[in-house]
Amino acid sequence: MKTFDVPGVGVAVLNDGEVVFAKGYGVRKLGETASVDSHTLFGIGSNTKAFTTASLGILVDEGKLSWDDRVVDRLPGFQMYDPYVTHEMIIRDLLTHRSGLGLGFATSSRSRASVANMPTIICSTWWPARSFQWSLGSSGRISSESESLRQWA
Image (cartoon, rainbow, N blue to C red; front, side, top):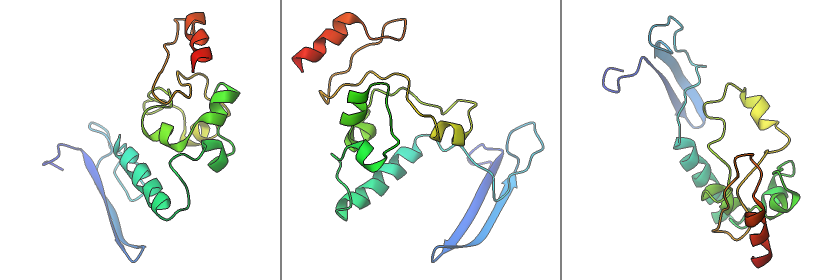
């Protein structure tokens, strides 16, 4: 823990898909007494992007999905702020920062279950040009000038 300057760590060893050792060491947060245990959740930041993309890449290699599959075809409950955007969003858009979604809920106080069950993403800056994104006005609504660009796509 000293090497990485962290107050606590969790260690798990798996063999043939079975956990053979799981233990926590140290505390969850500096200055607090709550110990790390085998059930402690750690924020791992952007590492999840690599895990997700690698996992989807395996499915692509196996022919089980395509990078260009529509998200709603794989996740029927997926919904953006606009029905057109919802229908046109593809897996590749979500993985290449072309979804128009902001930083998300990494620092939110919401529970994982509440985020996973949110019915609609409120707003996005995406439209299916696959490379162009518009800006949001201060009110959170898309400006009329930006909206008029859709006719040229």
